[in-house]
Amino acid sequence: MTPRVLFVGGTTYSLPLPAGLDRKFGALGEVMDLRVAAVGEAGGVADPRFVLVPPVSAPAGRAMVHAKLLAAVWGQLRRRPPDAVVAESPHFAALVLPLLRASGARSALIVEVHGDWRLATRQYGAGRGWLSPAADRLARLGLRRASAVRVVSRRMDDLVVEVRGRPAEARFATFSDLAAFGGDVVAAPGESPRALFVGGLSPVKNVTGLLAAWADVHRRLPQARLTIVGDGPQRDEVERAAADPDGAVDYMGSQPPERVAKLLDESSLLVLPSRSEGLPRVIIEAFARARPVVASEVGGIPELIDDGDHGLLVPAGARGALADALAALLGDPDRAARMGRCALRRYEEVALTPAEYARQYAELVASATGAGPLSGRSPAEPA
Image (tube, rainbow, N blue to C red; front, side, top):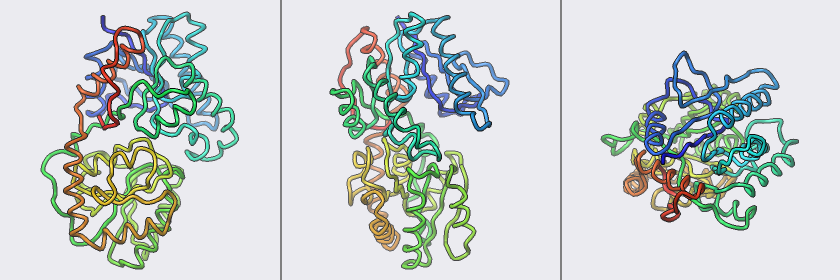
């Protein structure tokens, strides 16, 4: 029988879905009867798979949205009890637990761990540090009461073991639609050395550290430039750096995947100086375009990058080491190109199709609901 699965989380969607997400949910829909309770705007489009709660811009918006989202989950549990509920984080899992008990639904609870949940109130956004003790307790409760846990990397599995005393039931990466990054690869970038950063402009991504290191790189390589793509609470800081005519920083805001692929082609390398990561898909995107990566040695990043082969790894927060690594590759285009070719081969090893991603999820659901065993814990490879 096709299992009923309800996905729950704070991810924001906009209907109609972009092509990549449509492929993801289309593949999942082939192996399960799915519903998604999330934040977003329907835009006048009817999609029976989605129950969307509009975002709220008021100061108390986050709490209001979560309350409405939980109400939507309650409605789903009462109207069509699922075989499994998938919570996109340990925190959401803990919030769903009392609804499961009150509704009487015998749904398995699957918890996803995409990153270090302890940073949710400490480094993402601002002004929420006071919530950390309560948030940590919620996360531990969600993990301990879960029927099954899915992680995206070995490092995340280590964190889960610390809380549960046993590893996650499955390990495979967050879905990444790589269609925009396929096709003919630009073998070498332009003559001017350029580094590209793509990600949220938040403390966990160490944007401030990147800008400080870049000042050092620019003194050594005056012709080099840094392009920053993304948005977030530290946008003002990035805009100030870009406004400095002597800083050699270009800020592009948020960009669609097709534009990111073109920016990778125009760049010598990708830089990702994060303080914490799960298994970043942007690294896979860079590999698909044959670009090496300079990144922090945190989370699942070392599972993708062999230092010296696909790029260079540096200690998180080490400004001097980051500047040295960037200057070394930007100043040696032949070495960067060799690493880029190696990165492309790595991409060909790890890229999976939407159908393979859906198959892994179907196995996890079957195992969590007692309908079937897992064929084996999948390696932490991108899907």
